[in-house]
Length: 308
Image 1 (cartoon, rainbow, N blue to C red):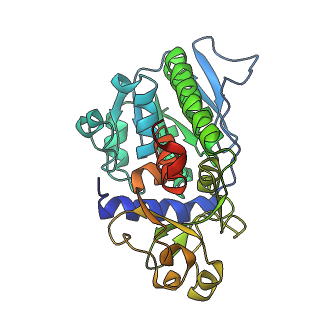
Image 2: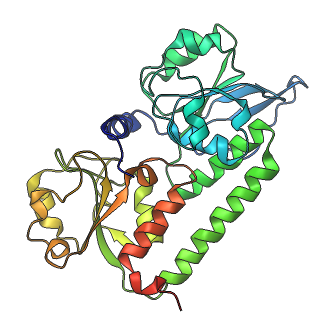
């Protein structure tokens, strides 16, 4: 399914906002607190903050599509009372009350929903979020997965917060099984040198701090930009010309269907090794990142996935 332009724009904006934070990974269990209220639990979020949440969370708001997908994946969809205009998967998410977009949500609309917690992906407005919502006793919990493993850990933590830990554990176990299957199928195959094109003009890719490098590695490739500083750096034409990947993965979205002209003479283009993957599967660090990894693995090593 072709991704709408606003989804691509959101991805780039979030990618740039990524550099504002260096948060630690989410804890998969509540942190200890000897003075904790018996009706609350304390979780450490991606910014290292101790966030006190009701033991029985009933109403939540999501400010990012990947978080919405996590909530549904752990069986917490009935508790989701608000999400963003970008939240379009699963189908049920489209019917949830919209509170604006990811980077500029309507705070009055959020407050009117009386959520127990607002789930936030890293964004530069986090201090304003916390200050405004804290005045209304609404907790903000930040999720920022920088690796595939942290995506899985985040899913489990959200399940724990929502009281659906058993379903979250089952979901994550199934995702791990699929990842193990991919690793097994590409094991022993020649490692492909891969360029991930997030946007054509300007040319954005996955840098050192992006989870997409690990995703490519699991799929049997090696990102040629894995050592470029930052998460989603913008490359110059001169830098791109020197990379000469033997495969290009395009995060398929509006304006990003073909390789940047800098790759016209690359081995990837000459040998027809250019592949388009639904941007939602690559740009959302949630449960469907496994779908994206499977798609990339099939593109890079089709012989490993032929039916026997």
